[in-house]
Length: 150
Image 1 (cartoon, one colour):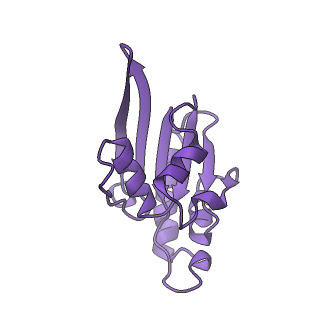
Image 2 (cartoon, one colour):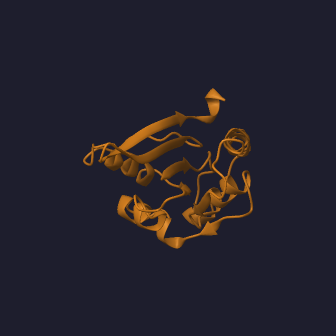
Image 3 (spheres, one colour):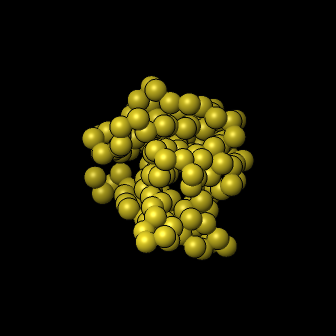
């Protein structure tokens, strides 16, 4: 299974939180990351997106074909993310567009540091995979990239 965690790009400050939109810089970040991801995503990657406007706009830079799930909104837990993604049993790829600190907590949990919270920069992607090797299951960190490195 491939699990790609994509934090929304830079958004405006303000309230209500769910209505915050991407800034001009955020739109550029989302477009750069989308251009990077598009040729690399496995075929038939299932894309799950928080209902917050900033995550919707981030995902739309990649595609309009995604599922909006309130369960992975701003109040989500790492367990919520993993449950909706089907980790680790699902056999295909899932891209989750969500929020910090949940995405950082999810990555930490999968990489063996459950009490930690990794910092996921705005617009950044953390790509993890799970595989079986000689009867042992392994979680691998395949890629971490922020839009300013693209």
